[in-house]
Length: 382
Image 1 (cartoon, rainbow, N blue to C red):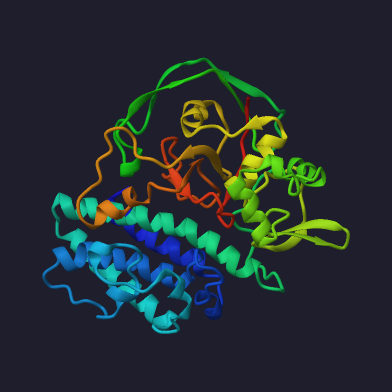
Image 2 (image 1 turned 120 degrees about the vertical axis):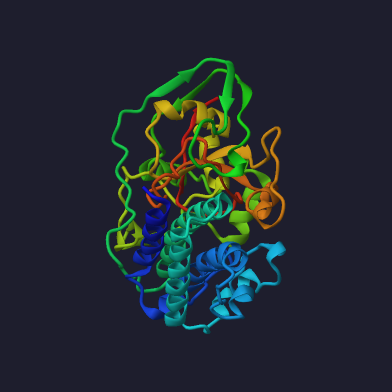
């Protein structure tokens, strides 16, 4: 697909994800990590405006002088910005004005791509496309949290659903040895997937399937959330301080467990993979089973023999730079490198992951406490 077509498809897909929303849904921010959909729509547009148009289009006129400040996320090199926790306070600009902003910038990028731009522009547009696709998945997380924390559990349709894990439990064995890790060959990748390098792994056996709701319910019924011996100390304090005793979006109503998804509240399906799990909970469950979580390197080595892509899978690997990693200069260097501290790696993809991002070398990362993301559990035998 031509870059221009990929760009236009990406821009349209973001707006399609938001299309079932009411105007009021676009603005709220029920917790710091959840950004309002209006902000996502504007920020992904800001990226193209500030990184491409302002720098490379001499005839471009900025849509609004305040937007560079309002919709910068964490790029210190790009100037001052609003604080993340304050995004939900912005009733202005309006949702309609943000959509005008999107159309204005989309047309300008389309025009610059018609004029045979240099490789720098093409590379930046490609990064911008992948950046917006990442925000499409974040939009799915954030919209679900915005709706799923409302008392009426509104439905916007049967989207981003998970299939039952009905395959027979098997353990796939890998021998100790030296394995190559990281992105190789052609195609796009992020800088944190580079450079490729070798790691030595011990023998391991990894599950062919994800942990299901039914299995996790057994953990709960056996007192998993009340047995401090199963938990990291930090995880134990996290669930105690936040009153957590079950996965996010689980509700006990009418003598049965129910789960909220985009089509509303429904009876818990025991065969569907357990989701919206923090790394703390994933670790405690694995401990309860007498097993462990895979390292990100074990996961990558095993990925060719696994069925994956329903949920991002927690690993027990800290998010650190690969040997020889080089952080780019300037604002783009802030994209991944500066977050390589106090984050854990997830591997795979989810049902909300944009096509093309489901690479086995893709390194997703979140803090161990994160539960609103589309995350699940795969086990490795000790």
